[in-house]
Length: 138
Image (cartoon, rainbow, N blue to C red; front, top):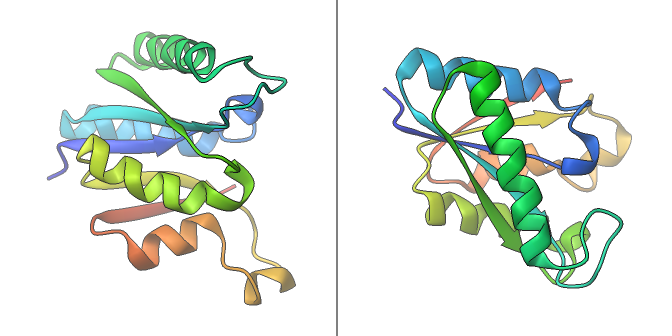
C-alpha cells in the first residue's frame, strides 16, 4: 500500500517522539516501504549542530541507528529553513515532494486552547499534503 514513508524528527527531542518513530518503523516493516527521517535545521549555528552539513550527518547517523534497531531500510533528509520555528510546515511540505513520500507519520501533542488559533504542524500537513498523514498522539 505505502512505498515511501516520511517521519519528521526533532533530533533534540527524539525521546519524546518515540511512539511516532516506532509507529513509522513498524509501518515501514509491515509494508516493506522505505522510511525517510526528515529533520529541519537553520543555516545558523545551533546547540545541535554548527552547520547544516553537520546537522545532516547527525540525522544520517540517527537514521542508520533506527534502521539497525528496527531491521528496516531507512535514510535521512535534512531540510534547511531560515527560521524553523515559523517555516517548519513549509519545509515539511517541500520534504514530502523531495522524498516522494506517500505517507507521513508524525507526532502530535494533546490539543489545547491555542490550537484553535494556530493549527498544529500535524494538522496543517494533514490538511494540505497530497499524501496520507498519520498523526500519532503522544
